[in-house]
Length: 144
Image (cartoon, rainbow, N blue to C red; front, side, top):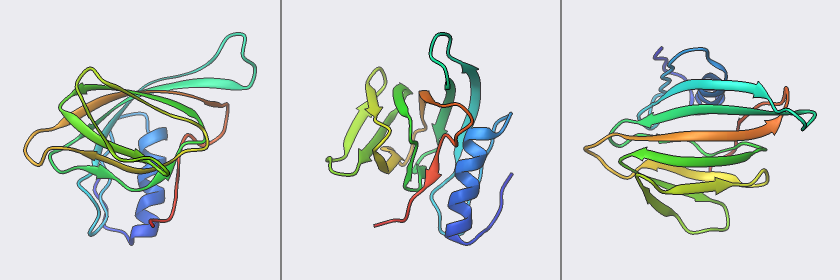
C-alpha cells in the first residue's frame, strides 16, 4: 500500500500500519524516508503477567530506509538479522548496529532515529516488545 500524505498524517498511519496490520505493509509519505517492510509474527498474552502481551515482528529497511520519530511505551528488544542500522533514543548518541547485535528501548524512551546505515544494501531486524495489553504499540512524536 503506497499513499502520499502530509507528514503528520503519514507518521500516524505508518506507525499504526506497521504495528497492527496482519500482513506485510509499506507506507510512504511525500518527502518521507523510504518505507519499511514490516511482517507481524506474533501477538499473544503473557502467562503469569496479567495485563501484558508480547508482540514480535520483523522490519526491513530498504537501502536508505528509515522511520519517523516515535515511542513505544513498551519494553522493546531489537536483534539485527541482516545489514546494519542506526538507532538513537533521546539523551543518547546514535549507535550503529550490525547483524547479530542488539538494542533495547525502555517504555520512557523516544526513538528519535531508526534507519538503514547503508544506501546500497537492505537491513532487517527482529523486534520483541512487551507492552500493556490493548494499548498502542507505538505512537508518533514531533520531530526536533
